[in-house]
Amino acid sequence: MSFASGCQGQFQHVKGPFRCLHSVWCKGQATWTDWGLHSVHCDSAEGGEAVVEELGFVLCPAWPNTWRTGHMDGSRSAQRPLWLNMWRTGHVDRYMSQSKHAEARELMYSGALLFFSHGQQNSAADLSMLVLESLEKAEVDVADELLENLAKVFSLMDPNSPERVAFVSRALKWSSGGSGKLGHPRLHQLLALTLWKEQNYCESRYHFLHSTDGEGCANMLVEYSTARGFRSEVDMFVAQAVLQFLCLKNKNSALVVFTTYTQKHPSIEDGPPFVQPLLNFIWFLLLAVDGGKLAVFTVLCEQYQPSLRRDPMYNEYLDRIGQLFFGVPPKQTSSYGGLLGNLLSSLMGSSEQEEGEESQDDSSPIELD
Image (cartoon, rainbow, N blue to C red; front, side, top):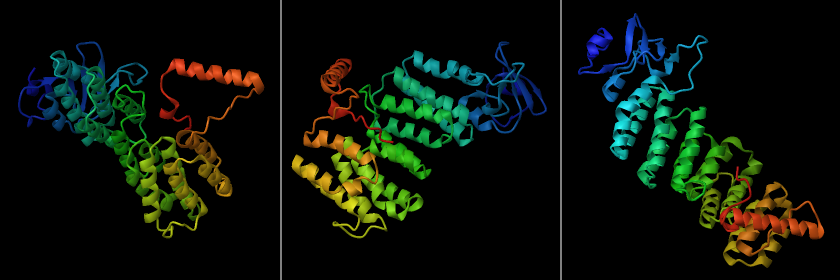
């Protein structure tokens, strides 16, 4: 069916043959038919030319987000829009069957960007998930360009959409390369930068912690502290970040975030030493980590208990840091005492070793939220 005959003169300035998926036009409303299987109603005839040119066939006189299935209750179908299934069958699957995975991904990625540019969030999110599906099925190696593409898609998604949550979780899992880690550090960094721009400081901090960008994390924390925090808490913002970086065995980033934050924060005077005792503790702790002497670490924690009691999580972090850098044995946290408690702890320890060969040094039991 030609474009002109199928669309009865709509969008005639778009040249070339296009497959038309609808059968009836009526003054700004159209009814599509998927070869008699479903009916889809569109509420507007605005827009559409750019998509026609890009994807090679008419989608609808309205954008895909306006579609709904012809169920009697008017409920939205849980399936993908019909146009997307048909486009995937006609274009993407053809590339995939020819093992042209890169070409298929580029087509889906370009389509997603196109729909984002016209505010079509649902359709763009569907294509974005197909990009991830392609990466997973083809077992594509992680590359900077792919990570940047995924981060670009993430940045264009509606921050409040459930699709964004599903997308980032799946993208991080793919970027880990099956290692069981929490995602590629570069992807975490790109996500953190996007969330920082959105002033979602809490989630930005989480992703910075799993990156290697200590400087970026520090700059974000300075803005976070000055915009949302109390003046009396300026030391706590960086203390938490340093302790959490150390719990993740990222000593270099811990040092960078501390140095950058204390130099750039407008409410912190030049140091060390600092006016705030907690900052002095963090400074001494970073020096002690380099030395690795347990006696120094123990005395340091004892002397600064008044400052450490400001947040009950500090001592939890320090327990973990003691294990990682000073050879402190893990605490026995069993609720049972005596021989029974020791027996249960040993059984739990052997069970964990049998279930996974990840060493205790490679994962933190502490939630870094």
